[in-house]
Image (cartoon, rainbow, N blue to C red; front, side, top):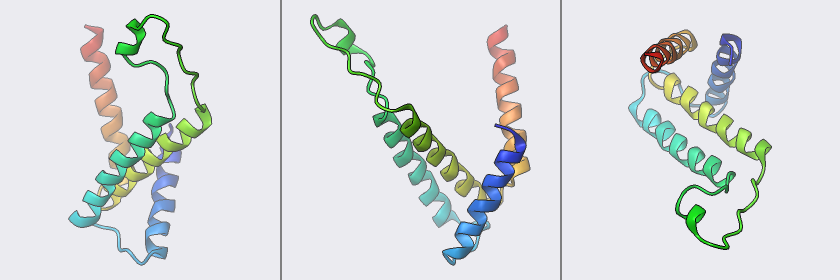
Length: 115
């Protein structure tokens, strides 16, 4: 995901909040609603992938279910990201600040795991 995509998501989500009559900015109530939305959307994404996840791999005769729908899974994961953007909007975190945090975290993890 490039910075332009992140920036566009912030702009569009801010417009959506304005249409809904919700002022963006530091707002703990809406921040927590966005966090709850992240959990809900992540659960929906998880439901779009019904491949074996553990114990059923060891059950004799178990038939592995087919992967449901990659497109639907991508859409649910996009919903997770949109809720992350909302959480940022209600925390006064800009697209640039989020991009920088993502870059820092991924770089730090790469350095950690490369050792």
